[in-house]
Structures are given as C-alpha cells and as structure tokens.
Image (tube, rainbow, N blue to C red; front, side, top):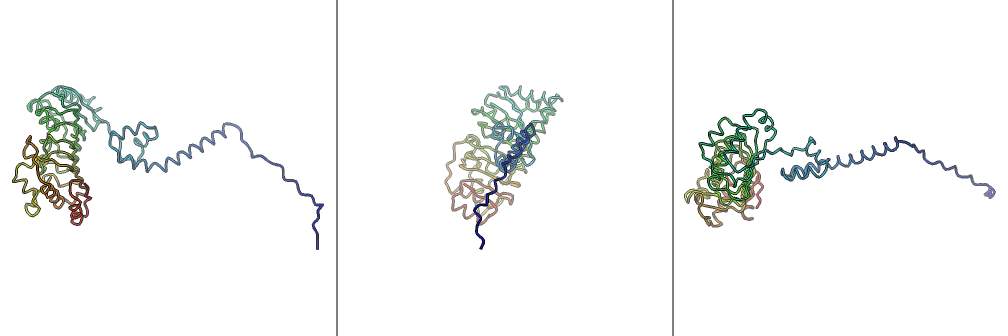
Amino acid sequence: MLGRNNNTKKRPPPPFLPPSIIVGDDSIAGRTRRQKRAIASKWDIQTPIIIEIINWLDQESLMNLSLVSRQLHSTIANEPGNKNKIVPVFEVSGSSTRRIFQMLRNNFLNEEIKNKLQYYPRMRLNNVHMYDEIYDHEVEQMARDVRMDWITSLNIYSSSSPSSRIAATILPSLSRILPSLRELDISKSGVVNIFGISNNCPLLEKVTADNLVDICFTLDGSDMRFCNNVKEIYMDHSSFNHRGNILKDKISDSNNHHDIFMFHYCCKALERVSIRNMKFRIFWGDDNDDDDEDFTQNLLIKFVRNAPPTLHWFRSDLTPDNITMLRMERPGIELLN
C-alpha cells in the first residue's frame, strides 16, 4: 500500500491575470450603447400598455400627458399603434355674433387662410353667453357659399346660460356652414338648442349634452330625425320633452305602439346610449313634470326591447331587477346604471 508522500509540495496557484481593460472612448461608448439598448428594450415592453391607456383618454387629458416627457409625446404623435391622436382645435371667441360669422366668412374666402384652417378638424366656440342676438336672414346672408366641410367636431362652451334667443339660433346657424359635422358637445354650453341641426348635419354620429336641465330634448328623437348615422348619445342629468300625455302613454307602453319608443327617429345606427337621471317636461320651458318611477322604467324597458341590433351599451336608471330581466331578453347589450 502506497502511503502519502508528505514531502510533496503543493503547486503554486497560477499568477493572477486581471481582465483585459480597453481604455478609451470605445469602452465608454460601448457601455452607453448597452444602457440605451436596455432602456429602449424596457420601453418597448411597456409601449403596448401605454398605448392602451392613451386610447382611453379624452383630448384634454391627451394634451396634458404629451407634456410629461418627450418619449410620451413621441408615442402619442408618432407611434403607429396609437389611434388616439391629438386633434388641432380651431377656437373662436368674441362678443359679437355678426363679427364672428363675418370673420368665418372672410377666412373661408381667403384661400391662404382657408388652406391653413383645413388642418383644424375641431372647432370650439367660447363664451357663447357673451354673444349678441342675430336673426335668421342675417345668418343666411353671411353663411351663403360658406362650407367648412373639413370640420368634423364642434364644442360649444359657456360659463353661464346665454339668452333664449341666442340659445335658439347659435347652433342651427353654425350648422349651416358645418355640413360634415360628426361630433357635437354642448354639455358646457349653458343652454343651446339642438333643434335644426338635423337638416344641416346628416353625418352626425356622436352627441354629448350632459347636465342641461333648462333645455328639452325630444324623447322620440325627432330633433335628430335626419341624422341617420348617430351612433352615440350621452345625455346624463338632462331634460326631455314628451310633448303631452298622448305621446307619453304611447312611448312607455310596452304592449302596444312598438314603433314608438325613445329615440325611435334616430336609432338606426345607435351603438352607445347614456341617459342617467333623466328629467321630464311636457313642453319647452314648462316646469318639471313629476313622473312616477313606473313611467321611467317602462320607457327604458321599451327602448331596450325595441332598440336596433347595433346597440351594445346602455347606461340608464333601470332598476337591478329590470336589468336582470332585460339581460335575458337582449344578451348582446351591456346594461349599466
């Protein structure tokens, strides 16, 4: 048996060789490029999530977000996957209705200004309560041959309610020169009459008119009867006119008059409707008509049952029991309250 040779010396460890170091700009540049690639890689992973968030934002929130960083601004403006872009706004302000219409006419007739304005598909009309009165024949003369058909969205804003005359004329007057209008928002307009826009803006697709209690929209949708492309209606906390007890009975009768129901004049393409906390008036300007809960529920039930197959989202004051019942009858509609 061989024994261990205690005299055997251990081999010395190999000399320590430090890692090679490349000194110079190439080393720094290499690390910088790697860091940039790492950051870009992380951002690419997050981009789909960011785009999903962006798609839920309105225009004001979108503009605020674009100011947070250059990267977010670039994503909003240039990312191919982002469909929710910032839309330039053509803002109109003043105190004289005549001067505003004259200004719009002059801008339209000036080819250079007209070409520049075509980059602004949204119009915002500010401080409507400050406008003076104007008569139909004056508007007709100033709006003659003026068609701003590149404007597809109109927002009317007022910090207080305008006079009844301005309320009755401003929107019908504007609609004469905006034949391609697709979106209308009068929620912050104080009081603006939607009647008359139907003839001039047949392409209208979206109407937002929340918190308007001093104006009555027709329950049957007759004030938008020629707008066959309306897809979205948002009229929460607003007033509706059922034009007397005869129509009131018919429009809420689920067993009869199946062709008469809420918005039946403009429902052919409806996809989304929100009408929470509805108020009712018999005629324009009358005091609130204190309808009982049965009328409201019957009105809403009849609408859901007769709504077109295009409707897939409806938010209203339906009771939980009625929502449960209607979900069985119309499973394709998301019912909320």
